[in-house]
Image 1 (cartoon, rainbow over the protein chains, first blue to last red):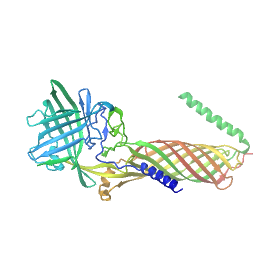
Image 2: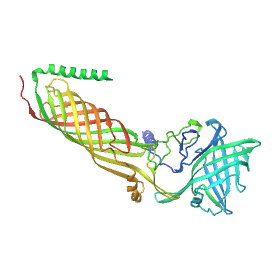
Image 3: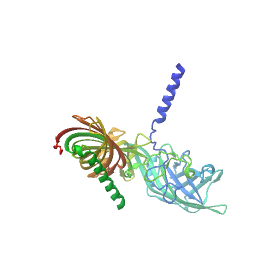
Image 4: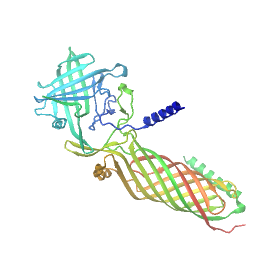
Length: 205
Length: 271
């Protein structure tokens, strides 16, 4: 009799908790499909933690199980901006993919709030001071020979939520063309809308 | 279309003629004054997607091969829950012809309340301020809009069954013409110090239409033979013309109305 009561209580509690609404976590990825390329996220500036690009005839894009962005800032004024996601067009053939851009900012960026200096900045990836590191599945290219490429931070926002400084939103576009064993690799129509805070930003002395 | 209208007119007059034939023996006009109260509910969709709302993660989809990424199907969608509820009170004289056909008009005060909240979370984010590289967001539990309208209800009803029955079924076609008197907007913030931004948020909300109208077919029961007469009726579906809320686009509604009537005057029998 006692165990039956316990069973009813467990069922009731399960029902109650399963019906509770979860809070809308700012860090969640929200994928709003682009009108022209529905497999890519639409360009946005709301910090949807999303990115995507056409990768040949395929796509490189965000996956909620992977932290989409990491930024490392170095004492020598260099910065590493990494996009991590998946490459593939079907659920069963995805593989992890990572793209890192190294570039100079000519200033100290010690905190994610200092990322404001990237606002409106466009980086020419063919410049000698820039470097691109690319990995797709098990393959990794330490430094690719960039034929054409740009990384543009269209808008950077330092965000306060309920009066408390919480995160930085980096929104922009990118494109990249390089050779991999004489084969042209093309990433086009790239766009990102990412949140950076203490969890995915670090300063290296 | 014209043929349909002709058929409807013919059917209506046929029904009227039938009623008149059946009640020739008791032809008379009665005036009843009644008080009414009722409520309506209208479902709806987001009226506009406020640019300042950050869309929330809500549904999960593997469509397009996106691995476990919350996928917003429609870029206009904000996944917000919305409804429009109204209650009203009114004074409504009714002329009852031949104890079967009622025509009424009066005055009605209606309060419409619409709410706007996140369907999947207890709050949503609203961008209140952009200043250079700085953006301020606030978390909002819900937004509520309350509008008061003064209206003129116009109703036509046909009572069925014998006049001596204690409960008579009736069918009604009603409408109301509403004029807006006042609108109040309220924002429920997660953090109470953020009430500082309330006027800024409210200024983004447009006013609802100054004039609204809705039409409702109804079925109801008139209970009682003596003073007072009690009516209970169900409105379904009701259709709104113009929006009584600027937070949402209302669709089909349903409602419930109660009224009490007191006979005040009866014409002399013709027989």
